[in-house]
Structures are given as structure tokens and as C-alpha cells.
Length: 157
Image (tube, rainbow, N blue to C red; front, side, top):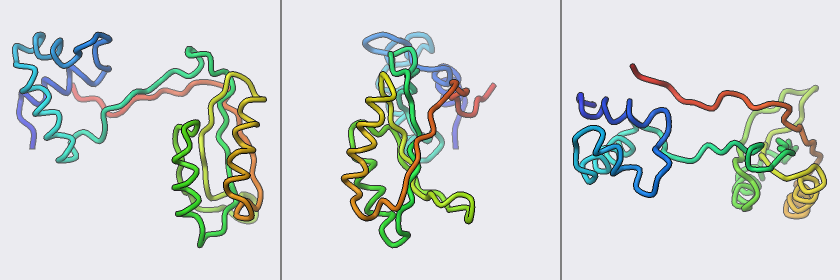
């Protein structure tokens, strides 16, 4: 359950945190609260699942990562959890997840996003993943991003 102060904090943060060294202090000052109170309430809302996550949503293109490839892998179903954990732990994989196959057209069940300054660097990272997976890699593809989609969560008014 959230109260009006929680709602004010959510409204103040849902467009992003202030780009300064102590963003929670800025939010607290704007709302007339103590920084510790803002952080305590955000922590409670995270624990309660009111807020799913606080994280960075980078614009990879603005950072110079012009080649962004969703790699799609056909992994044996009995190996998918281990494969996903190993691939997701790589520092160049921003997110990794398991999805059902759509046979006979789509055999891939593991997806891992890889970012690079050019396609050659993405393909080099894909080779690292392929070596890591070994015989569990029964085939893969790279689907390169062609535009940025909206990256926002739910908003409250």
C-alpha cells in the first residue's frame, strides 16, 4: 500500500532521476522531505513490489554503440537454464531471457542482447557466446536493431 508521500516520490522519479551526484537529496529537497526518508520509502516500495526496479536505461546509440544485436539461440531445453545463466553473466550481454520456440518457423529459445560500436565487434562477441555454449549451440542468428523503441514503465498522474 502506498500513501500520498509515496505517490509524490513516484511522480518525482518516474521520468528519471536527476543527473547529479546525489539525486535522492535533490528529490528530497524538491518534496520537502529528508533524503533518508526518500531512500527508505523507495527501498520499501522495491521490497513490496510497488516499484519493480531502479536502473539505468541507456541510449546505446548516443553512447556510440551503433550495432545492437539481439542474438537468438537454439539450445536444448534441458540445458536452457545453465546456458542462460552463463550467457547472462557475460559483461557484454545487457539482458538475456528464455522464450518458447515457435516451430517449425522459429527454433530459437534463448535471447541475449549484445551491443557493439560496429557489427564486427558484435559478431566477435557472438563467437565468444558460441564457444561458451559449445555443443549446446544448435544454431543462432543476430537480429540487429534498426531504431530505438520507447523505454518507459507505467506512469501515475
